[in-house]
Amino acid sequence: MAITTTRLDALRERLQMYREAEARILKGVEYQIGDRRLRRPDLASLRKAMEALEDEIASLENPGRGVRRVVFVT
Image 1 (tube, rainbow, N blue to C red):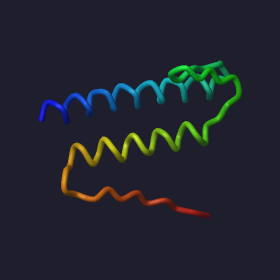
Image 2 (image 1 turned 90 degrees about the horizontal axis):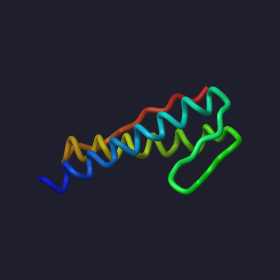
Image 3 (image 1 turned 60 degrees about the vertical axis):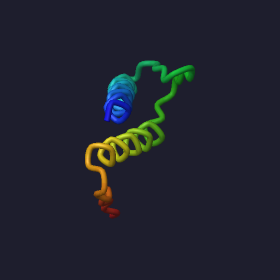
């Protein structure tokens, strides 16, 4: 359980970093994720990474239950 808790904490911290980067992008400020420094808004890849982290967190919080994401396309 400690490994799962540690992993969850790390994933949550990483997700928070992505959310902070998203806020800076929306304000038009340069941002950095790990060793990548990005100057132009790249919301699509950032949001894709956030969704993947959210799914992984949900699967660790609810083991044995499938994670389903509904995407509405217009």
